[in-house]
Image 1 (tube, rainbow, N blue to C red):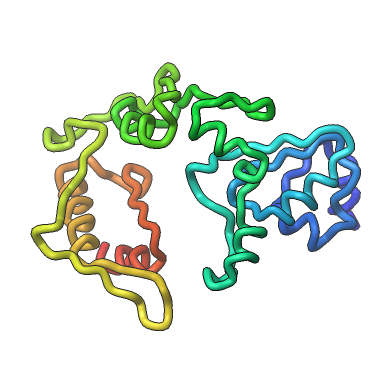
Image 2: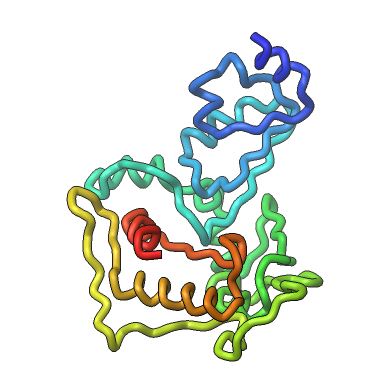
Length: 220
C-alpha cells in the first residue's frame, strides 16, 4: 500500500499509542520512540510502545495534569491501580518531585512561554513548587486592547450568589450549568457589541463537560 511505503521511508512517524498495537505491522524497529503526554497513557500501553525502540525511549508529559484514560470501575481497585498508575509515579519521579529530590531519569522543562506571569503564578507554587520561570514574551498579545474591567490577565467571576446549581444530562455523567452558561454568553455578547470581539478567533470558551459545551453552543 502507498501509505505503508511512505511510512517505511519517513524519518519521523507520529501516531497514537493505541494505533501502534492495533496495526502492529506498520510500527516496528524505530531508533527512538518518544511518548508525549505520557501521564495519559496506561502502563501496559507504555510498556508495549517502549518495546518498539531499538536505542532509546523518551517519555515526556506532566503528571500534574490529565491522568491515564480508563473505563475501569473504581470498584476494581487492584486493576485500576495496576493499569492506570502513570509511568512517572511507577518509576518514582512523582515521589521525588513531591519531596524536592532530584531523579536520575528526569529533566524538567522549567521555562514556559504560554501564560502571562499572573496566570502562571496561580499554578506555579501550588503544583510545581515555584519552579516555573517566564520565557520572553510569555502570554503577550500584541496590538490588542481590552475594556477596563478586563484590566488583569486573570479574572475570577464568582457566581455563587446566583445559586448556580449544576445538573446532569440524562443518561450521562456530563454536567451542565445554566446560570454559568448565561453569564459566559452575556460576557461574550458584551465584548462583541463593544467591538472587542470581531470573530470566533478573538475569544475562546473552555469547559470540562460536553453537556456544558452543547449548552453554550445553543445559547451563544
